[in-house]
Amino acid sequence: MAIDKSLLSGSTTMLVLKLLDGQDMYGYQMIEELAKRSDHTFELKAGTLYPLLHSLEAKELISSYEKDEDTQRPRRYYQISRKGRKLLAEKQAEWITYSGAVNRVMQGGVSIADA
Amino acid sequence: MAIDKSLLSGSTTMLVLKLLDGQDMYGYQMIEELAKRSDHTFELKAGTLYPLLHSLEAKELISSYEKDEDTQRPRRYYQISRKGRKLLAEKQAEWITYSGAVNRVMQGGVSIADA
DNA sequence: TTGACATATATAGATGATCGATATATTATA
DNA sequence: TATAATATATCGATCATCTATATATGTCAA
Figure 1 (cartoon, helix red, strand yellow):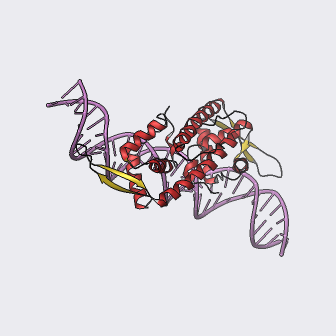
Figure 2: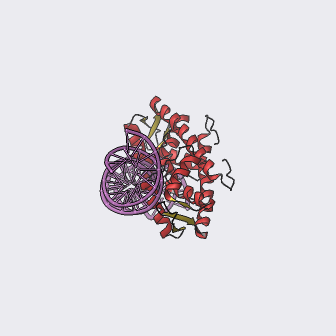
Figure 3: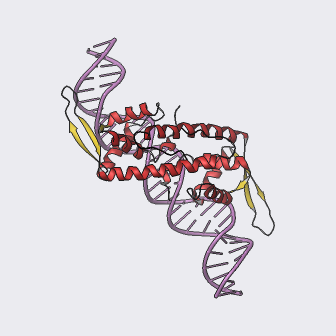
């Protein structure tokens, strides 16, 4: 099912940081990994991700390095910084607050499954 | 805690329709009711709500009528339409899919409370 | 009674996140 | 050798929300 793009708005940064919290990744890999982990609910577009990565790097939430896997086109890997992990924790707390509040409002008759 | 406004993006329509699913309401009342039911996580701004109500009415998802409670300034009440209830059900299903997917992605080490 | 604040609705313009379109280059496959 | 997948990048459009501003009424305290 394709999800209204505006729903995703605001949580993309959190999701990207979370991916990098597990391991260093390059852009294209994040797009695929996010699709995989979310059963294709999230299909992040390249036009969204790359500018986002650049802006996260400018804010020093992540850093990057090139890695040559010869025979492969060189890939730009990203790693999360200490500052990035701090923001991730904040975003995660925010998400819990936000989704909990939505569920409370929606609990006016129809039951909401939790995940 | 103030929530990143972009997180709310996309679910405002669903929340408004849900409020009207319970009873007819006027704009200002929705702002207060939403704040109350969400423990002030949501503080919808008038500049967001009124244009949204107008556009929902234009799409025939809701309709409105004026009601004079004398001694009070007349209030414009909104009621959800059949079409609106249908959209509400869809948005609700989307929310379940979306929040479930976010939680799955975030389940990579740190536990996420569910509401 | 006057001023301040809450109630109530409304609109214009700014901001910010995402997307679609487009571009480039390499690698794998048919 | 052409096509698709991999991989990164940028621009402009779109859309939702917010801030600021406006108007008008009701209430309460000084």
